[in-house]
Length: 637
Image 1 (tube, rainbow, N blue to C red):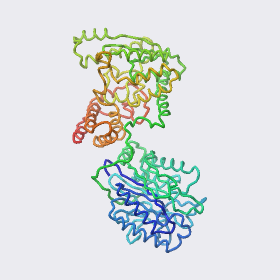
Image 2 (image 1 turned 90 degrees about the vertical axis):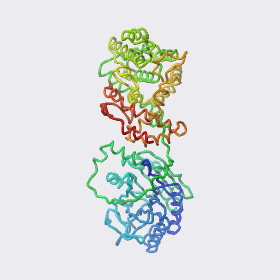
Image 3 (image 1 turned 180 degrees about the vertical axis):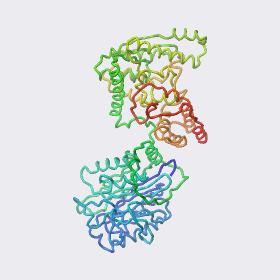
Image 4 (image 1 turned 135 degrees about the vertical axis):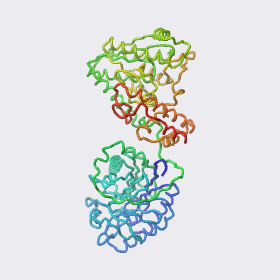
């Protein structure tokens, strides 16, 4: 286990009902393959050593003896493998038979967990042969020549990874054993299953697994019986699933005639962070006692991920893009509409620069006015050209306001800023932070005064990424009466604007939105180079896609710089050298800690995703908190 990742596998071997030796050899082969792929935990189907469909043969002593012998052979044959394995077989305890998951590693059987809920409806007759684990003594048994802990109260732990086990029908009941196991500390659930196929069942099963992994805030590894199980009355499709906190990471191909393995990595540190954040998770934890059995995982070897690390964690997946963009735009507009309705205001003032953020803010404001049935002429769009304004952004600002049918106003602030700089004895030739911020503050003053003049609200345009980096002029573009973009990171601003362009019925609106999307991100506070923008934000503070990545994992999961750097290096390995990732991570950390004072007095604005920097909501931090520990770890990378 490295960086919190545990590589897991769901194995679906070919099986012959009643042929324990054959079944054991199939498992051996898959375990050696899994070890070659550096899997650390492998789960097999329910009753896989005997086959699930043996029916009344489970009452045959010879079959039970052969199953135990096959288990002993499997444990011995794989004793040199470092992985943890869970296999299914019938286990005799005193005068009863139990459908069990047996967990072993390095030649030692660590525990046997009996199935709790035995289906006895429709095609199932498990109570005919087995007793529920709820009736079993929580004790030790002798199995395959070893003393073995036995019971439903077993968990298996190695550092941050804590493994719980349930069997097939256990998942389908109102309160599955995995729910109790998760409350007791398990963050990785193994399910040994033999669920026969039925039309429509596959989709329901997949959603059930994803939902349970989300409810338990855990990884979930599911392996079900496949080819070779008796087809007398049933068909077994060989389903295999690996999920993490509601997200399906990997699934097996169905109806295969050969054995198969599927892999993925479960990030148990991410799951721990999620549980710490969701403080209601442990509120339901009772006094239930568990026995925790230690196992080991290899450490120090390089991590090779089969799962994708999304380089744009704030951006919806392609298949969900349209629906999610529509939802976010509606949330932004609904928040603003509520504020307008509460204040009785029928005028909104938006500074329109021809850049992405102000474009999105104007689009959202237009939606809010449409929601309330207010005429868009009540939206006062203001463009304020100054020293750095290029003709491209100026024309796009005018075209955008015209296409949206809002009231357009132009206020050239060059003379006002020049006079101000003269008043404070600041030479125009000194193009420093004073020169830049004087323009931003003048623009905010114009907007605020126009809002007063027209009885309106100034709508903020700054986004979440800028708030994280403090890339805003204090009491300049930093301030508004309602910040509609406050919960939207820069990478998502682009996609929302792109969605608006794609769905725009007005061809002229779509065209100007596309040109705005193609314009470099810039505050345009320094004079242009000819007709081109001379001041490009990402050249100064770094790529926004990297900063949004850092922000997501820093805030959402509280990951340390070491892990954030490693994840970013994986996600952007084909785009940014590792040294560049490190460079911008240090910039992010320095700026994030230094600029909290700007976030401590933010105006209201809607939260639209999992991460927010509102000082009244998700993020509260001292403005003078020290970044030393984070930067020191960053230096060691």
